[in-house]
Length: 462
Image (cartoon, rainbow, N blue to C red; front, side, top):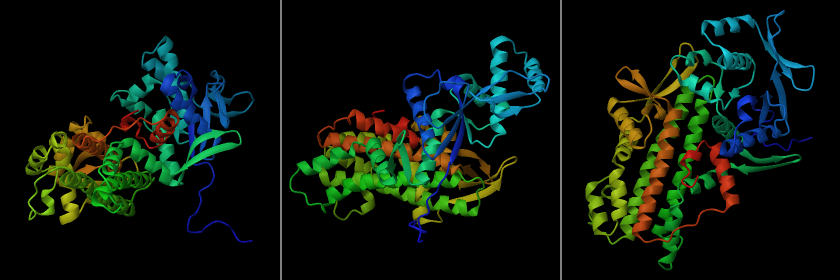
């Protein structure tokens, strides 16, 4: 019998992500944090997630395995993770006495001792299991992980937050081209990649709609008119950046990164740099056509640029005062983009290396000059982000190493937010009508997709 599956579009099947849920901390969450936790637990009813909940006997949701940390068995010097409601067990930690000696050496007593012994045991059990992530909301544990003193104790145990887990599983679902947004007994609802990118592009940069409505309001503008095409290009290029961000992130999730990984990463970064430039220029060209700006017909196309002082002066003179002011404040971002774009468009492109971390796997890194690194650092700080959050790392010969996954997770969302600010300023100068907030139902789905995209903190209305 012929298979109905397309061999050129293989479907991945089976459980893809496995997690251990810290029921001790997750059960106490309230408000928005509880909603995010419930979204994660809901995914256990889908084919993309398998969850083991520890020490939360009444954890809601189908598809959840439940376990608890039993009392120490001192005769056998172990402590077992038992299955809730049965005589089975998931594993054990041995020798148990070494954990107690460690607590003694740390001088821990009372609740501090009990806390340490609990998380030392369950995270070590998780470390030795085949599950990907230990998901917790325990603030002390998360704080200790960032501490130079206590952090090494928890290394290698794959401990992350609920929101980080949702972003990871969202990326994994996008690799399968289908995102589960609702799961109930005998019923699931999914969103495809196209709808994911469209909805998030609209949520991240809603001001573009104001330009579309303004174009409609000025009279009979055919669909191939340049103003109409320009405002549509803003939307298209934002979705291009979201796709490039995912493509780089998926390459960087490889267990072993090699020259093929680096080549794919550089391909998408080159496209992203040119797309960012096109985004900024499309706004400038729209403004030059929509506002009464006096442009010299013999001026080269490059003179229409928000990064140029002379063009911003023309903007002010033509009534684009809000756009000119916002563009002037965006100088650090314009400089960083220019420093990365120029080598791509006019010179040798972006370089990179792969190397072996000790201890650790082989990783791929982009390399930038000291001037490019300085521009990126200034741009990150102008957005309120620490430079290391954009992937800027140590030196390599006379260059700096950049983690490409962190770079696209920092630079690209901030670029999209800047584009939205610039478009909103232009819309204000054109006196375009305001837009209404989405209905509650639509906002809820957008919030879910933003969590899957790791972008909720960038949604203006969130």
